[in-house]
Image (tube, helix red, strand yellow):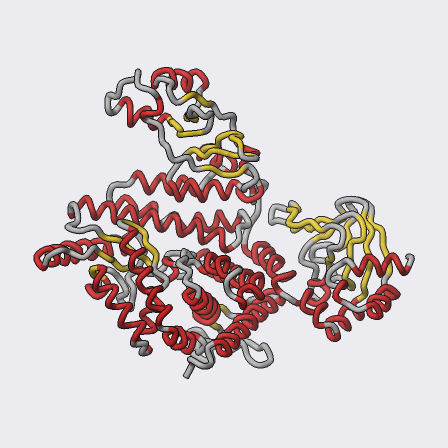
Length: 631
């Protein structure tokens, strides 16, 4: 090796680029170089741990994991400038994956002693490699998958297949085409949809076979009318480069079965629910369809019971936590809205408009498996005392029915009674404004606790503008009452992660959960509390933690600096919780939040300790920021 070439390479390769020239020269002297022909196995799954860190100079490698079916699934690729072998080296455990050359490859070899010395003496080098977010989180995900799930040849297709890859040819017609002619075109080409173009030759709407049945045949509509009179104007679309998972999520959210696929700003094709089902054999959309077909609470019970299967499917697909909770939230939302629709049919038109809001994990769109009910009801201010009485009488019966119905389909009642069936949480907009006025201007501990709960509320059904007006009201109050945020900060920093001074786990000493810690209460909740505080400080209305993090990236100095770390911390803790609960369900146990760290792998232990350490660091920053307001 030519020393100058090696130093030049390291100078442009993280994390070595952070080292000074003298250190780079010293490292360059200690490197060796190896050549691996294409398909050569460099590290073997279940084999001895790596004795070095390898830096790819030329070529590339693929990371494989053996499935229970005996097949090797590719889970990652590394290219020039990337490294591998570090996790295996520090873990001193058997190799978790197979690393093979995907082409003729040359690697620099940095021995274990040098790696350890650099970690001890170079903060930048240590931060790069020891940071869970750079190297640990993805590997820990894979380790959890490998330990608890079976893979098949169709795994991950929902997440690795691009929408453009399965999009079919789209048929288009002008907006003045007659209904009968459009139906004949669909019948001739055996298609279930057709896109309508306007006079500017741009997509203006869509017609499906359902439209022909429900708008023409069922209503005896004249087939000589132009197709634009019955087309659906809202066109939901997905980019050709987006994953099929993105398409599934939109289809569920907007309750549609056809999705336009756009590439480079132009219409490329169309995809359907059927296409997605063929891709994997099952689709979360099928569950939504089952929900929509039901007209009784009893009919929803068996459908609701299948939701755990969705989580298993998504885990098998290799979905990340953020993806899983999005799908589960959309499905659970659809269940609750269907119950509310059934209630409206049973009790008739409400005397005044209302908005059904949800909070807690449901309000943050962070449900994993079914949790207890956390909801409230805001209704429009009645114009008279008589109408106020009518509203209270109607919603009293309405909310009790909804509560009992949700219990039947698997959503237990809230033990603290934070439900709309509790008259305290079923009030007019005026009363809700008074609640927040009192909480924010008189922030005693109980007031702060209640506001913490309701600051995560989001509208689910009914007149959303009622919640929007309330949100505008309390955000305006917060700007005038900064001291309230200080009281909130004072409360949330008391709930610390379960990690000791020497990064040892703090677990329960006795009782049912001896030697365990509560991952939700001591991990997820402290992080949620911090992000909620920052979001309120900046007037952000979103409630999901990930959305709040993304919105804060350019608005809050702490989130800007630790954005990636915070995002990956949330993803990892949520993922660990989902896997743990899924394993409990498979074993026939009720899913809970307590985890015994002794049951975690070395890599998972290291990762969770790092995430707890970050949360503690963020809490210390909150203390410094709000010190003048914290008592």
